[in-house]
Length: 315
Image 1 (cartoon, rainbow, N blue to C red):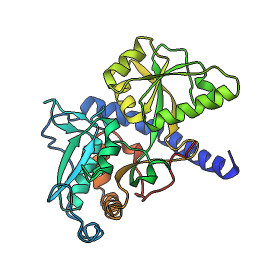
Image 2: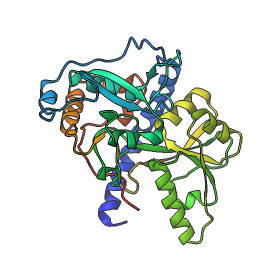
Image 3: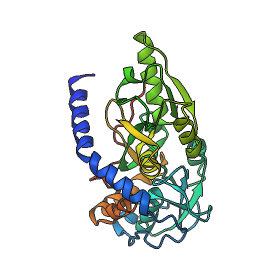
């Protein structure tokens, strides 16, 4: 890691430490009081943003006339899940999608998808955007454009009675059984850590793949795995709600640098300037902060949305 990388890493680590208590308190409160009803009466709405609309490419036509069609993977609260009717998708990502649709003067149409299906679906034009906790990576930037809207934080969680106290660097995970999700940033980080460990003569880790949140939690608390490494927001929510697991590490999605979560659009579609403009207006007028606060995600807020910033590097 070079000098510039070390400085950026130290700066990010300090920011995480400063916001950690706020995040955990917010997650605990949100888990206890969040509205999971299909009506979502408290959802924040926005006015049409003329500047964002003007940034749309000339002649652009949405997938569905008059609508902003967004793919989303209903994984777990507070990011996205099904409401109490088991049909309506709700969560922080849904609220952000609604705000962007409002800003663009369009009706929001959500299209639930499996996580593995969103890249092909977006590339083939089945929807206008993906808003589903997608992190920026250099590899993904070859096919997609990104407008950042939240910090990308991944957490290591263990059962409450586990002897493990800290997982923060490659050597810490040597020989462990770790739950993650296939085809994700967190999987790529673990694979790189494992490669480094094996090159250093350390024991290999074992990856367990559970895309379902309930199955992941059951595997962890029953002792079939040593730790879970997945997006922090959902795990913090579950830990606050159930009290069966605790956090022992926090890693940025851009390890060893910094990367954020972004609204994803097809490269060449021309949508990214309008989406980024809409997000920055929503940040400026406070609507963005209100939406995150509904779900206890204030500490993951950005002060500015960016178009195609540096992401997780290619290993």
